[in-house]
Image 1 (cartoon, rainbow, N blue to C red):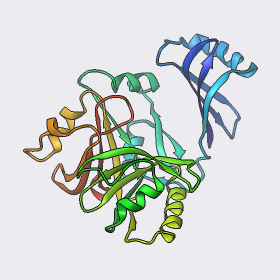
Image 2 (image 1 turned 180 degrees about the horizontal axis):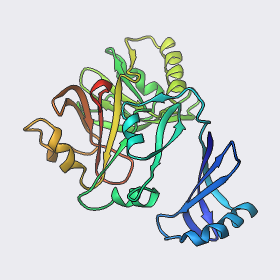
Image 3 (image 1 turned 180 degrees about the vertical axis):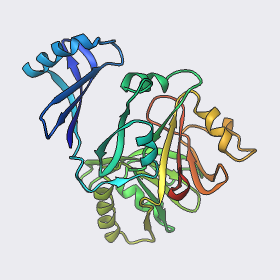
Image 4 (image 1 turned 90 degrees about the vertical axis):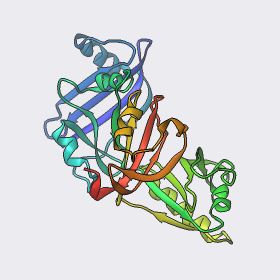
Length: 285
């Protein structure tokens, strides 16, 4: 078993440092990998940075993963991640790769691949919570728990929003899309159960027609991100599907590679063009 800590911070005025600290719980032997998207840090400098870290650095954020012995959920692509050299860590109750090992793996190479013209990267984000909202008053209800005018969304149109508590404090961020006869919502994996507990509490106070359908792990979610994402995904979309008419933050139910019951949304979090693809778990691999 090992403990993994990732720190995003600043060392000696060098910003955007990514520090991956791994400690084997059996031997207490530490391993430190330091990279930066901006500066090419030679491995010979790691002992220097390690001493600086020991004296105190300026971490912007710190994410600690649970021990590998926890009861973790495996996504449909779990075996594929391992076959490709994924460094599997516990995250939000799931086994997920934090990076890939090998000649073409690592934080820097993976980061640059997603930015290079004509290329794209596939992210397994199946730990995130996918929800369908039904009922004639679904938009009215959602406007009571999120920020934004949901009722004005046209079919296929989506919005990035915030889930708030009864005092207006932020609980989570979310993407909400008018899917026609239902509203499609995606919330973060680490907070999805807390979100849904809050939703149910608010539904109990709401005098209207609304129901929540949590898709659980029957639907997987994959994010294809990068300049080459459109060219790649077009190969598995139905003939006649015109991606040039699919604007950013719009989505539609469709078939993917002939698989029924899928959904594609043009959105992402990398700053590049990209798509999130929801599909039945039994057809994901």
